[in-house]
Image (cartoon, rainbow, N blue to C red):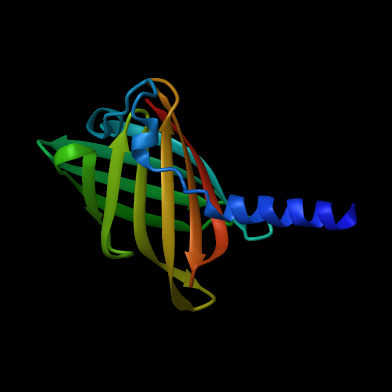
Length: 176
């Protein structure tokens, strides 16, 4: 009996490891449909936190975003205020491409971010140059946003280094 349970547990673990992660097209029929140039236009407020790999909250923060679009080009000017009183600014420059795809650049992003929107979801993948203890670490961001209604969007981003999760960022956006 013990051997059977061990075999079942091993097979279940192996099958779970083969599961494919979600992709933006999986959300194509979800409503309300997200249009980045509509949602990120004007002022958007956000509240967030960073948790380490154990789930401990390391930092809390707020963000005020001033957003604008001209045609297929967008600017998201983000002003962060952290719970320890420090501040940061990130300015994203986005470009809408065909098929719900986007690219983006910011000063602390290494290379170019790649994104795709479908239904109510948007996924960003990029490398962030993150200052930690006086040095810069390059971490990979797997960043998902989900539009909940016309004013609220939720965001969850997993940070990894060498394929290992180092933390998560969770945000709630509110469009004014």
